Image 1 (spheres, rainbow, N blue to C red):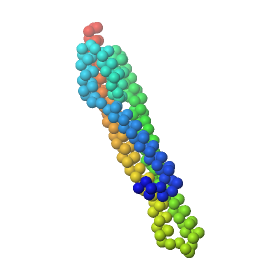
Image 2 (spheres, one colour):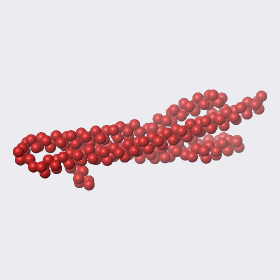
Image 3 (cartoon, rainbow, N blue to C red):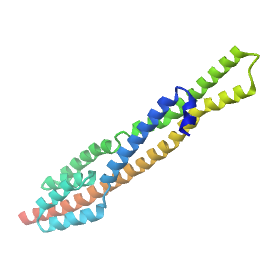
Length: 210
């Protein structure tokens, strides 16, 4: 199969490079998002248990040891637990906006490669057909049907290879995009829960002081 692909012309090189880069981007993003996705219900339950016991420092330590934006947002909330609920909500909203670009990093690059690959394949096919027709014109009237069919299938190889990379690249892009959306939803859930928890604590402290 590899020997067959070598007959596709000079455009095969850029297609292979783009396909390899797309694979690298997918694996990098998959690993990062896999680490970033946690069971937020269990995580928050443990944090709230520690906070109810008065162990805020230990709760912050657990946040530091837990990867992902959910833990980062909860840590931010715990470090500013004495702020008024309105100020805390605003702070967490801004922090959440800063986390989203980190989750989406390089996804646009993967999408661009998925769009670029079929164009490179088409260009390789058109160049191959052009070279074939130029050669046929130079050899006329000695051109045989075998020369024509051989030139056509070689020209099509670049498109076949490009599409072979495009399909998994697009599937991978939408798979990762789905992961980002789930993590973003988890972030919203965590922010709502921790804000509600800290707001109750803030109100209780206010009643004690009164």
